[in-house]
Image 1 (cartoon, one colour):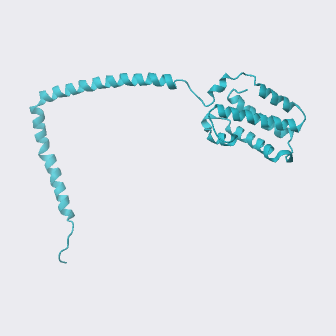
Image 2 (cartoon, one colour):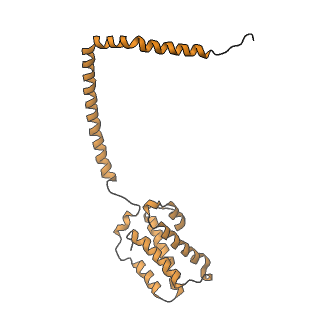
Image 3 (cartoon, one colour):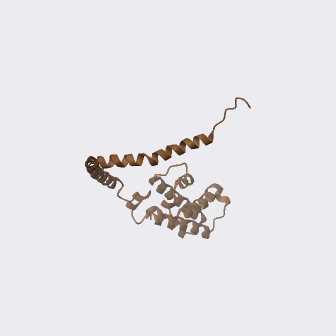
Amino acid sequence: MENIDFLNIQQIYYWIYRLFKNLFYYYPTKILAIYYQYWPELMFLATIISLLCLVGLWYLYQKLKEVNEKDEAVFGTVITPFTDMEDQPYKNERWERILNYMDSDSPTEWRLAILDADIILEKMLIKSGYHGDGVGEKLKQVERSDFNTIDSAWEAHKIRNTIAHSGSDVILTRRTAKKAIDLYRQVFEEFKYI
């Protein structure tokens, strides 16, 4: 048991106790004495500091107002990814051609209508600033909050992919074609593209 070094926790707690006892027993009375002795000087100093703080706050408020004005000039209008779509005419000629394809009885023209509608969707996404190899990659970048009809766009694009990749092996019914075109219509109407 010789040469055992250990930490005396009890001694450390005692020192902490003495420190706090001295701080709260002797020093508050000394601080109060100094406080009363230099009361006028402290009041003068506090007044000067308060005035400087008020001037500083007023200055910061003016600067913040300038920043808000510049901010409003740059970000004042609500911008959605599809803002520049509003310049399009109400009648979209390409969309009218798609509707004419759908009026026919030919499944080939229905396929053309779906493929053409997907091209419009891709152009709309490109104008909105989405990039990628295809419509699918562009749709993956879209935030749901910016695009309420994102599910319709995905479903229509899946029908288009089935037609495009399977070719003439897939039998396209009028019902499926109308469903796909209606899904595209919902997307285009949301952004006033048609």
